[in-house]
Image (cartoon, rainbow over all chains, first blue to last red; front, side):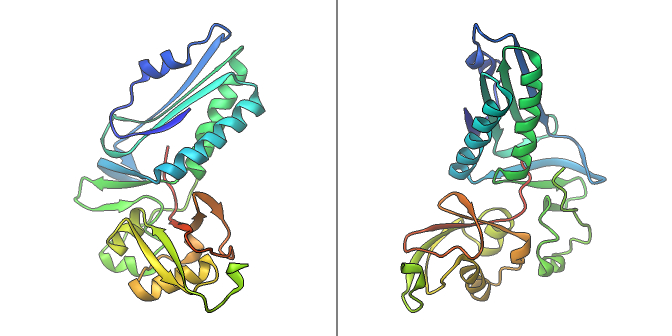
Length: 156
Length: 88
């Protein structure tokens, strides 16, 4: 199960959705909005998603992770909209018989979400500037907008 | 194959996100184009609207699936140019 949420993610409800008498393990990854990125102080940020495609891509990632690692089920939710420091940006939960499969599948899913999900992040900085993360260097002419900084194209 | 007919104009729905949405000033539009593939369509849109992202910095989806730039376009396709993603 994957969805984009326009309101705060509710981990307890997601945890309940995954409840399964076969499962001996639940591994959860929570991605939080932090106050520093690439050395710049972040005040808040905005996620924008291509929702129909994100659901399609994520369902494929989840299906492949279940198959590869032998997990029972995976639920993941990604926020869109304006978020503040400390807010929950993404939640991934995996249940499996034993913990190993759940740890592996959870890491696999969040890694692939970061690479392939069509979701973009605009950061608003303490100094009043703002910018699309990973995007500002893509546009030569965008340098004219006063963005002297740069964001490396990392997909870490 | 429709994609091989050079002169035929097709209607393509183009979706814009993030930096491209801001540059274009809208989330989506219907475009009438003779472009044979997505790469030609992007060049066409750059010429029309002054989009500044280089194709090498973007990925591409047709009907919500990642595709290559040489992918032929069909009448009614939904094309999304995908700036570097930053989810998670």
